[in-house]
Image (tube, rainbow, N blue to C red; front, side, top):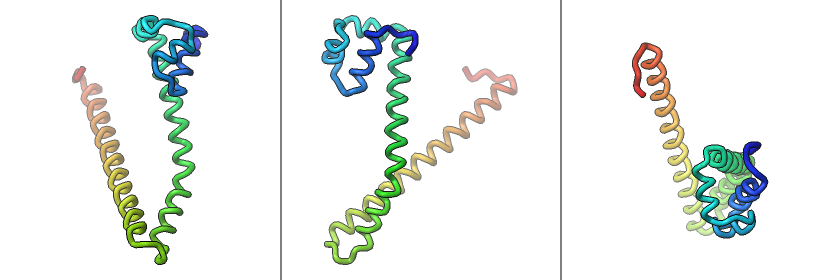
Length: 130
């Protein structure tokens, strides 16, 4: 964000804090039309996208750190025969749904990686799939 102004940085911080565009503009002391003009500037747009990516990466790290505890909690519900069957069924459904989504995501990632590799090979052989 080094190519951004102090107001642009305040605006980005306000947006990442969950403020609406109108609220964030007020926080940064700018008009809404200024925000939309800034969005057309590559440096501002890239700074906003990078800040969003950094926030998402931090959230992902936090979620990954909690996954073991979450799995333990679901496992405890599944194993507790004293709980009502509906609770255990909900826990089982959660596990199965999550496993299927994880499989789909990793499968898709693998397919994309294969396609990227194929494009690189074609490009290296003189093809131009651009």
